[in-house]
Length: 398
Image 1 (tube, one colour):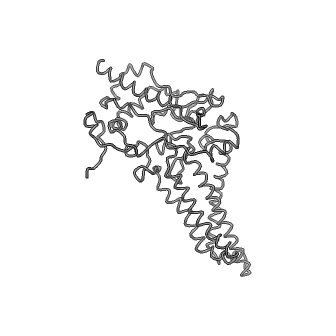
Image 2 (cartoon, one colour):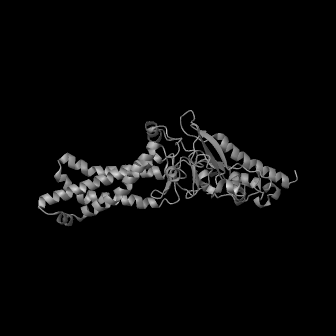
Image 3 (cartoon, rainbow, N blue to C red):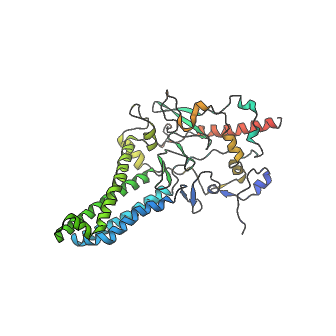
């Protein structure tokens, strides 16, 4: 069986490039994601944290079902008692499904801009003439767009070589631009964005309900022990130490997941993301994305999940990605003549405009969903292609 391998970097022989075996997109993806089932599942780079997260949920439920719930069966009527025992196990399975949907799904990764396939990879970014660098020709670091009467800006991402769609941000952990970026969650090892935010909110809120359930059932068991043995609270805890541990554990965790659920409920009501809430203060300005409580709920929790913009199992041309992955290309990309004062990577903003340089939005399309304007992607791609071609012709004396 012939072994499939990546074409060598810096490949200049087009015939060798054309003869190279085709690769799937996930095999040459420049982000830090981990893929499973040949690109069907998309995980973050720190996916191992899932083991800890699942363990923190499953182990307490096992202790509750095996050591505490049996005494509750006798305290409640038969059918209700069995239901109370089965509920945490079934609910834990449901939470596991939500974790899978959050961690193994494309969160809304924006496809990177590729250089044109008809360009050779024999050019060198270090050969760029000094007069080009001094000519002042550069791609604008930001573009202004109007959102519900508010002027916001979209920034150009030097890593992905594209104008970030509104409310998009580049995650430094996953090395991807993510649509409607909320945050990178270390507990699931994945970015939380447009395609998995709903599952994330359901996961956090369901975990809070599970903690509350176990907390209450353990207290009922302690009260039952006190009544049956005419003992005080300390003696009841000594008789059932597992209840004491679960009460302490669920009380502590409830402060975290309960508070997080409440916080994200507020974000949904006001149509904000965690990133926007931490970085911007909408109290002083109008939030251009807030369309009212009812519409915000519908948009976030009841709208159809958009399809992924990336087909990670699609075959790609090796010659394109030999250029796309070339260190020369990315060295050139970072050498673009951007004014340092005009963008201050990821931080600066013009005070005259709304401070949303990487968290803005586009006008609504026909399906009433936010989508990146195609002209922004075309502009970035055209700039890369034309500049490389112009520099190549100049070196060849054309």
